[in-house]
Length: 49
Image 1 (cartoon, rainbow, N blue to C red):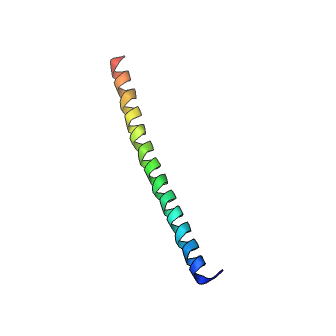
Image 2 (cartoon, helix red, strand yellow):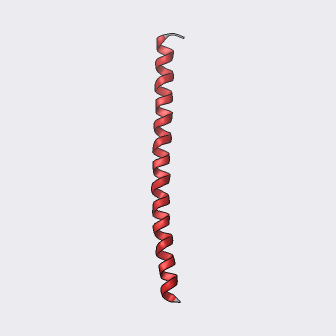
Image 3 (cartoon, rainbow, N blue to C red):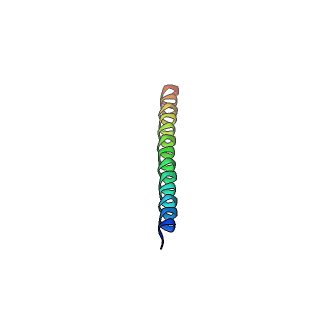
């Protein structure tokens, strides 16, 4: 492979890993929000009983 192909491969893989990292961070943030909502709902149910 010549240098140009290696450079394209590097940037392609770097972009893929970057997008994957962003996706994982977004999923973690969503999970945190869902946990807060679930705790809030549990408290509301306990208050009603």
